[in-house]
Amino acid sequence: MPIARWAFDIRQPLLLEHIEPLVTSLTADNGPNIVPVTNLLNFLPKIECDRILRFRAEDDMRRALIGRLMIHAFFAAHHGCHWEELVFSRSETNKPILLKPDHLRNISFNISHHGNWVLLVGDTSVESTLRLGIDVMDFQKQVPEESFDTFLRCFQDQFTKGELAFMNSAPLDQDASSRSDDQFRRFYRLWCLKESVVKTLGVGIDFNLQSFEFVIQNEEEVLEPTLSTRMDVYVPSDLLPREGWFFEEALLDQDHCYAIAALTDTPESVEQGSVMDGSVITRLDWKELLKDAVPYPFS
Image (tube, rainbow, N blue to C red):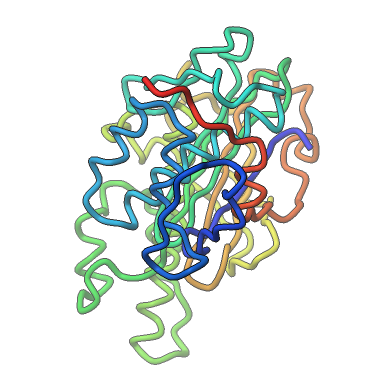
């Protein structure tokens, strides 16, 4: 498989059996076998721990912590790295980047988290020139009483006419509430795809999202990956090329969708199946996530 695609449900309880051999001091505030996830800060360098501990909401802290662990686990599993020797920094757009080992600096990887899920995509080949982006969205309304039309007014300049038509063409043979829910789902699906492109390019939130348009072939999302979605680029540039794009999107569950974008510099020599193979995303548990983990030296 050319790329690793991982998903982790943050609602999984962290059990004592998952980490007992790895740490010497544990607390069990939530029960005899459930351990607070803050014990896992032992497996990250202090600079990353300090950033994670700034989050006030428990779920925000869990998502950030799991995301950092997933990045370490990816490089340990697919590139043979020693967990505690990995050194990361951040780009100008706050995207995690690898500093050490030097020979893996160009490996593309990306993290996204929203709702109950944290997702990672990463290139498993050292020779590959792929650039990758991933995004996950929770379908739940941010403002439960808000109508779709009111909600969309704030985002209309982020979408093309074709994308707006796709959102507004949700089936009419339902009651108004159900149709509104479907419109929200289509919005989040398109937003997820847009974000996957922005993250692949490594640009900021001011990037012109109307410079490209998604054309949805399969109107209904399912748990099996959809590979038929395509992107038309209206304003091509060195930063946003017209060719070389591959996409995968699917549901994680009935409340969450995800999208992956891959960009290659050599589109003429790359086929869809060699980038996105249609296999279902790998869902990790704590044991799999932490199998290569070792505590970082205290500093």
